[in-house]
Image (tube, rainbow, N blue to C red; front, top):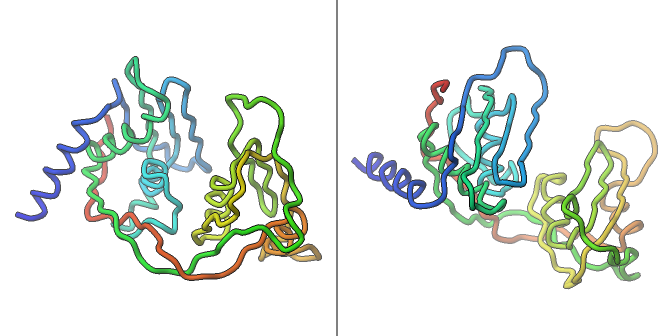
Length: 235
């Protein structure tokens, strides 16, 4: 009875907010490698060869380490998802509409909880900040990062969003303690843990190149816990 009540509440929650005008969820073609995710300016989203776990991470604006629970197929089964937004919604409505779609098609039920866990605190290093706020006008493609193995290049990125990006790289929550305002263009290169050869660690590179410091600490980490999910039928 409790499970039915939780599911009913979840369905009611997604029905109250904006929803995609039309959406297709189908099994991805077998053997395809890699995934491709695009969000259009009108609020729609197209995702090819993506698993439910990744869709949840996107929909709830969390990192993978903040997602807990759920059946194993959430990471193994791949889908193609194409969803068109209705007229009049904001680009920021993509994520609540995606949450609604996951509740409808995957019968996804989740809850949030906060756990005390290991974190990193990002602060200005003793020698002072070594990067300067970007002075150009912000464009539509700014406030994002290009990432690769041992490489991070960010455009018009505020410190809070840099901390969020580093959280994904370090697989641990990074808390912005810099108190620094403004948006920054920056390039960060380091030697990945699995790389052979010389090069600074990411902790050394952050201090030497950016004038920032990462320090281990304990703090609250918001988690999204999956209470239930079902495989979507292709449609």
